Amino acid sequence: MKLAIVCDHFVFLKKLLRVIEKEYSIADIDVYEDLNGYQNCGRYHDALLADIDTIGLKGLKCINSHPQPFTYIIYLAMNRNYMEDAYGVNVLGYVLKNQIEDKIYIKLQKIRNLMQIHKIYELKSERQLVRVPEYKMMYCYLEDGFMYLELDHENRIRLSYRTLIELKNILSSRFWRINRNCIVNKDKIIAIDHARHEIKLINGHSFHVSRREWVQFKKSNHTTLGEH
Image 1 (cartoon, helix red, strand yellow):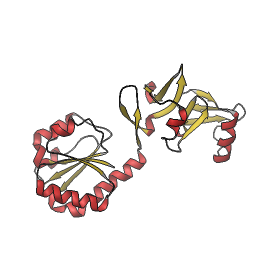
Image 2 (cartoon, rainbow, N blue to C red):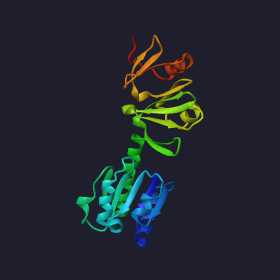
Image 3 (cartoon, rainbow, N blue to C red):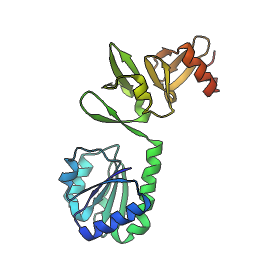
């Protein structure tokens, strides 16, 4: 889990880090003294712990007006004064500072559970790393010497991996390499034609599965979805 903490109160920060590292010894933590430092860091984080006493109401409004849909947010506060303003995309509420030892673990565990359900990949595109949620990924394919990732709503990203095997090694078991040129997200399959060795995805696109991959698929998947 990659955490960002925005806090300029040294004593509280030291306590917070001690509590987090006690439960999450392998957590990757970046600390910023102000919101600008965090927003300009250029790094991706799974979660942001923002001290309201550091960022103030202006910082709250800034976060709310610039949502980060794949970063979970927990606000930390001395009191409940800004509770009504502590909302937004992926905001998991707030924790009072005098309850850190009892409450922060529960919040972080919730984030960990959500991350397992909504897995996010950092993939190499042409110019930079891009964060892509697994549930949006339809299929990846090779075309004219380039690799593309097709997302839902017909969006496409050009990736910079050399081979499909290199990409497949990054992806979870939800992804199936159906032939030499294509990997599909099995969660997107709505029909399987066993006679023709073809699959159909939710976007209506159909793909042929190579004989070798079909044999492997039948060994590991005992489904009759769409058989006809």
